Length: 327
Image (tube, rainbow, N blue to C red):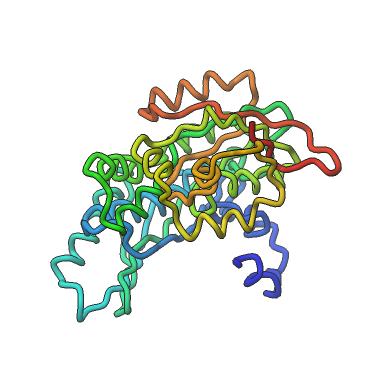
Protein backbone atom coordinates (compact mmCIF):
# COMPACT_ATOMS: atom_id res chain seq x y z
CA UNK A 1 0.00 0.00 0.00
CA UNK A 2 2.82 2.39 0.86
CA UNK A 3 4.57 1.65 -2.43
CA UNK A 4 1.32 2.34 -4.28
CA UNK A 5 0.81 5.64 -2.45
CA UNK A 6 4.35 6.81 -3.27
CA UNK A 7 4.52 5.46 -6.83
CA UNK A 8 3.25 8.57 -8.64
CA UNK A 9 4.76 11.24 -6.45
CA UNK A 10 7.41 13.36 -8.19
CA UNK A 11 10.92 12.24 -7.35
CA UNK A 12 13.03 14.80 -5.48
CA UNK A 13 15.55 16.78 -7.46
CA UNK A 14 19.05 15.25 -7.40
CA UNK A 15 21.02 16.55 -4.43
CA UNK A 16 24.60 15.47 -3.87
CA UNK A 17 24.30 16.25 -0.15
CA UNK A 18 21.29 13.96 0.37
CA UNK A 19 23.28 10.80 1.06
CA UNK A 20 20.31 8.60 1.99
CA UNK A 21 16.75 9.30 0.84
CA UNK A 22 13.68 7.13 0.41
CA UNK A 23 14.74 5.23 -2.71
CA UNK A 24 15.48 1.96 -0.87
CA UNK A 25 13.16 2.36 2.14
CA UNK A 26 16.02 3.11 4.53
CA UNK A 27 15.30 3.79 8.18
CA UNK A 28 16.23 7.49 8.15
CA UNK A 29 17.27 10.30 5.83
CA UNK A 30 20.94 11.30 5.94
CA UNK A 31 22.17 14.73 4.78
CA UNK A 32 25.78 15.90 4.49
CA UNK A 33 26.66 18.88 6.70
CA UNK A 34 30.41 19.02 6.05
CA UNK A 35 33.18 16.89 4.58
CA UNK A 36 33.09 14.25 7.32
CA UNK A 37 29.73 14.46 9.09
CA UNK A 38 26.08 14.05 8.18
CA UNK A 39 22.76 14.76 9.85
CA UNK A 40 20.30 11.91 10.39
CA UNK A 41 16.58 12.77 10.37
CA UNK A 42 13.59 10.54 11.05
CA UNK A 43 10.12 10.55 12.58
CA UNK A 44 7.87 7.88 13.98
CA UNK A 45 4.62 7.94 15.95
CA UNK A 46 1.64 5.70 16.53
CA UNK A 47 -1.47 5.09 18.62
CA UNK A 48 -1.21 3.28 21.98
CA UNK A 49 -0.08 -0.34 21.99
CA UNK A 50 -0.47 -0.67 25.79
CA UNK A 51 -2.86 0.86 28.33
CA UNK A 52 -0.29 2.34 30.69
CA UNK A 53 0.44 5.91 29.48
CA UNK A 54 4.01 5.99 30.81
CA UNK A 55 4.89 2.72 29.07
CA UNK A 56 3.21 3.94 25.89
CA UNK A 57 5.45 7.01 25.89
CA UNK A 58 8.54 4.88 26.51
CA UNK A 59 7.73 2.46 23.70
CA UNK A 60 7.01 5.22 21.19
CA UNK A 61 10.23 7.08 21.97
CA UNK A 62 12.33 3.90 21.83
CA UNK A 63 10.82 3.04 18.47
CA UNK A 64 11.50 6.49 17.02
CA UNK A 65 15.12 6.68 18.15
CA UNK A 66 15.84 3.24 16.71
CA UNK A 67 15.83 4.61 13.16
CA UNK A 68 18.81 6.82 13.99
CA UNK A 69 20.74 3.92 15.50
CA UNK A 70 19.90 1.72 12.51
CA UNK A 71 21.97 3.90 10.16
CA UNK A 72 24.91 3.89 12.57
CA UNK A 73 24.09 7.31 13.97
CA UNK A 74 23.81 8.86 17.41
CA UNK A 75 20.62 10.82 18.23
CA UNK A 76 21.28 14.32 19.54
CA UNK A 77 17.89 16.04 19.53
CA UNK A 78 14.19 15.15 19.51
CA UNK A 79 10.88 16.94 19.05
CA UNK A 80 7.68 15.47 20.47
CA UNK A 81 4.70 14.77 18.22
CA UNK A 82 1.48 14.68 20.26
CA UNK A 83 -2.14 14.23 19.22
CA UNK A 84 -4.70 13.69 21.97
CA UNK A 85 -8.52 13.70 22.19
CA UNK A 86 -8.72 16.42 24.79
CA UNK A 87 -12.34 15.62 25.65
CA UNK A 88 -11.46 11.98 26.48
CA UNK A 89 -7.94 11.96 27.90
CA UNK A 90 -7.01 13.82 31.07
CA UNK A 91 -4.07 16.16 31.28
CA UNK A 92 -2.57 13.90 33.95
CA UNK A 93 -2.62 10.97 31.52
CA UNK A 94 -1.04 13.06 28.75
CA UNK A 95 1.69 14.14 31.17
CA UNK A 96 2.46 10.48 31.85
CA UNK A 97 2.81 9.77 28.13
CA UNK A 98 5.20 12.69 27.77
CA UNK A 99 7.10 11.63 30.89
CA UNK A 100 7.60 8.14 29.48
CA UNK A 101 9.04 9.52 26.27
CA UNK A 102 11.23 11.93 28.21
CA UNK A 103 12.59 9.09 30.38
CA UNK A 104 13.77 7.15 27.33
CA UNK A 105 15.29 10.24 25.74
CA UNK A 106 17.12 11.05 28.97
CA UNK A 107 18.55 7.53 29.05
CA UNK A 108 19.69 8.03 25.46
CA UNK A 109 21.23 11.43 26.26
CA UNK A 110 18.79 13.18 23.92
CA UNK A 111 17.03 16.43 24.89
CA UNK A 112 13.41 16.88 23.85
CA UNK A 113 13.71 20.45 22.66
CA UNK A 114 10.08 21.10 21.73
CA UNK A 115 7.45 19.64 19.47
CA UNK A 116 3.87 20.07 18.33
CA UNK A 117 0.50 19.01 19.74
CA UNK A 118 -3.01 18.90 18.31
CA UNK A 119 -6.48 17.73 19.35
CA UNK A 120 -7.18 14.39 17.63
CA UNK A 121 -9.84 11.67 17.63
CA UNK A 122 -7.35 9.04 18.86
CA UNK A 123 -4.15 9.35 20.93
CA UNK A 124 -0.92 9.69 18.94
CA UNK A 125 2.58 10.10 20.32
CA UNK A 126 6.08 9.86 18.89
CA UNK A 127 9.19 11.79 18.04
CA UNK A 128 10.96 13.56 15.25
CA UNK A 129 14.60 12.68 15.93
CA UNK A 130 17.81 14.25 14.68
CA UNK A 131 21.18 12.53 14.89
CA UNK A 132 24.74 12.74 13.67
CA UNK A 133 26.86 10.16 11.87
CA UNK A 134 30.31 10.11 10.30
CA UNK A 135 29.85 9.85 6.56
CA UNK A 136 32.23 6.90 6.24
CA UNK A 137 30.28 5.01 8.94
CA UNK A 138 26.75 5.27 7.54
CA UNK A 139 24.96 1.91 7.48
CA UNK A 140 22.08 1.23 5.11
CA UNK A 141 19.61 -1.54 4.44
CA UNK A 142 21.57 -2.27 1.28
CA UNK A 143 25.17 -3.42 0.95
CA UNK A 144 24.92 -7.00 2.21
CA UNK A 145 27.36 -9.30 0.40
CA UNK A 146 27.34 -12.99 -0.54
CA UNK A 147 28.77 -14.92 2.40
CA UNK A 148 27.70 -12.34 5.00
CA UNK A 149 26.36 -13.58 8.32
CA UNK A 150 22.92 -12.37 9.44
CA UNK A 151 22.53 -11.41 13.11
CA UNK A 152 19.27 -10.43 14.84
CA UNK A 153 19.69 -8.25 17.92
CA UNK A 154 16.52 -9.05 19.90
CA UNK A 155 13.86 -11.74 20.02
CA UNK A 156 10.78 -11.07 17.92
CA UNK A 157 7.10 -11.53 18.72
CA UNK A 158 5.92 -8.15 20.03
CA UNK A 159 3.06 -8.11 17.52
CA UNK A 160 1.57 -11.24 19.10
CA UNK A 161 1.94 -9.71 22.56
CA UNK A 162 0.36 -6.40 21.52
CA UNK A 163 -2.56 -8.26 19.93
CA UNK A 164 -3.16 -10.16 23.16
CA UNK A 165 -2.88 -6.90 25.07
CA UNK A 166 -5.67 -5.37 22.99
CA UNK A 167 -7.78 -8.49 23.49
CA UNK A 168 -7.24 -8.38 27.26
CA UNK A 169 -5.63 -11.83 27.33
CA UNK A 170 -1.97 -10.94 27.88
CA UNK A 171 -0.49 -12.45 31.04
CA UNK A 172 1.57 -10.39 33.52
CA UNK A 173 4.70 -12.26 32.40
CA UNK A 174 3.84 -11.52 28.78
CA UNK A 175 3.37 -7.83 29.58
CA UNK A 176 6.76 -7.65 31.28
CA UNK A 177 8.32 -9.36 28.26
CA UNK A 178 6.62 -6.86 25.94
CA UNK A 179 7.79 -3.83 27.92
CA UNK A 180 11.34 -5.11 28.40
CA UNK A 181 11.74 -5.70 24.67
CA UNK A 182 10.04 -2.56 23.35
CA UNK A 183 11.82 -0.16 25.71
CA UNK A 184 15.31 -1.57 25.08
CA UNK A 185 17.14 1.08 23.06
CA UNK A 186 19.04 -0.14 20.00
CA UNK A 187 21.89 2.16 21.02
CA UNK A 188 24.39 -0.51 19.98
CA UNK A 189 23.79 0.77 16.44
CA UNK A 190 26.30 3.58 16.88
CA UNK A 191 28.99 1.06 17.88
CA UNK A 192 28.11 -1.18 14.94
CA UNK A 193 28.52 1.82 12.68
CA UNK A 194 32.17 1.92 13.73
CA UNK A 195 32.81 -1.53 12.24
CA UNK A 196 33.68 -1.76 8.56
CA UNK A 197 32.83 -5.47 8.69
CA UNK A 198 29.16 -4.53 9.16
CA UNK A 199 27.96 -4.17 5.59
CA UNK A 200 24.22 -3.55 6.04
CA UNK A 201 21.87 -2.81 8.92
CA UNK A 202 18.20 -2.10 9.46
CA UNK A 203 15.70 -2.34 12.28
CA UNK A 204 12.85 -4.83 12.12
CA UNK A 205 9.56 -3.04 12.72
CA UNK A 206 6.19 -2.95 10.96
CA UNK A 207 7.03 -5.17 7.97
CA UNK A 208 8.15 -8.04 10.18
CA UNK A 209 11.37 -10.03 9.90
CA UNK A 210 10.79 -11.30 6.36
CA UNK A 211 9.56 -7.94 5.13
CA UNK A 212 12.62 -6.02 6.28
CA UNK A 213 14.98 -8.82 5.29
CA UNK A 214 13.37 -8.78 1.83
CA UNK A 215 14.30 -5.10 1.51
CA UNK A 216 17.90 -5.90 2.45
CA UNK A 217 18.07 -8.72 -0.10
CA UNK A 218 16.42 -6.81 -2.94
CA UNK A 219 18.56 -3.72 -2.39
CA UNK A 220 21.75 -5.75 -2.02
CA UNK A 221 20.98 -8.34 -4.74
CA UNK A 222 21.63 -11.28 -2.46
CA UNK A 223 19.58 -14.25 -1.31
CA UNK A 224 19.21 -14.80 2.42
CA UNK A 225 19.43 -18.35 3.74
CA UNK A 226 17.43 -18.15 6.97
CA UNK A 227 17.66 -20.78 9.72
CA UNK A 228 14.15 -20.88 11.18
CA UNK A 229 15.22 -22.70 14.35
CA UNK A 230 17.80 -20.00 15.12
CA UNK A 231 15.37 -17.06 15.05
CA UNK A 232 14.84 -15.94 18.68
CA UNK A 233 11.19 -15.64 19.71
CA UNK A 234 9.83 -14.16 22.94
CA UNK A 235 8.54 -16.96 25.19
CA UNK A 236 5.06 -15.56 25.77
CA UNK A 237 4.80 -14.68 22.07
CA UNK A 238 5.50 -18.28 21.10
CA UNK A 239 2.62 -19.49 23.29
CA UNK A 240 0.25 -16.91 21.83
CA UNK A 241 1.32 -17.66 18.26
CA UNK A 242 0.79 -21.37 18.77
CA UNK A 243 -2.65 -20.57 20.21
CA UNK A 244 -3.58 -18.77 16.98
CA UNK A 245 -3.13 -15.12 17.98
CA UNK A 246 -2.18 -12.88 15.07
CA UNK A 247 -2.63 -9.34 13.71
CA UNK A 248 -4.10 -7.80 10.58
CA UNK A 249 -0.71 -6.40 9.66
CA UNK A 250 0.73 -9.93 9.60
CA UNK A 251 -1.55 -10.81 6.70
CA UNK A 252 -0.71 -7.61 4.86
CA UNK A 253 3.00 -8.33 5.27
CA UNK A 254 2.54 -11.83 3.87
CA UNK A 255 0.66 -10.42 0.90
CA UNK A 256 3.27 -7.75 0.26
CA UNK A 257 6.48 -9.78 0.59
CA UNK A 258 5.76 -13.50 0.21
CA UNK A 259 6.34 -13.60 -3.55
CA UNK A 260 10.12 -13.56 -3.08
CA UNK A 261 10.18 -16.00 -0.14
CA UNK A 262 10.59 -19.78 -0.24
CA UNK A 263 9.27 -21.49 2.89
CA UNK A 264 9.47 -25.13 3.96
CA UNK A 265 6.62 -27.36 2.91
CA UNK A 266 4.05 -27.92 5.65
CA UNK A 267 5.32 -24.96 7.69
CA UNK A 268 3.00 -24.54 10.71
CA UNK A 269 0.78 -21.51 10.39
CA UNK A 270 2.01 -20.03 13.65
CA UNK A 271 5.62 -20.04 12.40
CA UNK A 272 4.52 -18.51 9.13
CA UNK A 273 2.86 -15.73 11.12
CA UNK A 274 5.94 -15.36 13.32
CA UNK A 275 8.11 -14.48 10.34
CA UNK A 276 5.75 -11.71 9.23
CA UNK A 277 4.72 -10.51 12.70
CA UNK A 278 4.99 -6.68 12.82
CA UNK A 279 7.39 -5.50 15.50
CA UNK A 280 7.31 -2.38 17.65
CA UNK A 281 10.74 -1.05 18.68
CA UNK A 282 12.09 -4.26 17.18
CA UNK A 283 15.61 -5.62 16.80
CA UNK A 284 18.46 -4.50 14.63
CA UNK A 285 19.18 -6.86 11.74
CA UNK A 286 22.85 -6.90 10.74
CA UNK A 287 24.68 -8.36 7.75
CA UNK A 288 28.39 -8.62 8.48
CA UNK A 289 31.51 -10.37 7.26
CA UNK A 290 31.58 -13.99 8.48
CA UNK A 291 35.04 -13.39 9.93
CA UNK A 292 33.58 -10.73 12.22
CA UNK A 293 30.33 -12.50 13.09
CA UNK A 294 31.38 -13.84 16.48
CA UNK A 295 32.84 -10.48 17.45
CA UNK A 296 29.63 -8.67 16.48
CA UNK A 297 27.50 -11.22 18.30
CA UNK A 298 29.71 -10.90 21.40
CA UNK A 299 29.25 -7.13 21.26
CA UNK A 300 25.47 -7.57 21.30
CA UNK A 301 25.71 -9.89 24.29
CA UNK A 302 28.11 -7.61 26.14
CA UNK A 303 25.69 -4.71 25.70
CA UNK A 304 22.83 -6.68 27.25
CA UNK A 305 21.14 -8.04 24.13
CA UNK A 306 21.03 -11.55 25.52
CA UNK A 307 18.71 -12.94 22.84
CA UNK A 308 20.87 -11.78 19.92
CA UNK A 309 21.61 -14.66 17.57
CA UNK A 310 23.05 -15.63 14.20
CA UNK A 311 19.99 -16.48 12.10
CA UNK A 312 21.48 -17.22 8.69
CA UNK A 313 23.71 -15.97 5.93
CA UNK A 314 23.64 -14.33 2.52
CA UNK A 315 24.36 -16.06 -0.78
CA UNK A 316 24.80 -14.88 -4.35
CA UNK A 317 21.50 -14.10 -6.07
CA UNK A 318 21.06 -15.62 -9.49
CA UNK A 319 18.34 -15.10 -12.09
CA UNK A 320 15.09 -16.53 -10.82
CA UNK A 321 16.36 -17.07 -7.27
CA UNK A 322 14.10 -16.11 -4.36
CA UNK A 323 15.06 -13.25 -2.05
CA UNK A 324 14.83 -15.47 1.04
CA UNK A 325 15.02 -19.23 1.54
CA UNK A 326 13.81 -20.42 4.95
CA UNK A 327 14.88 -23.84 6.17
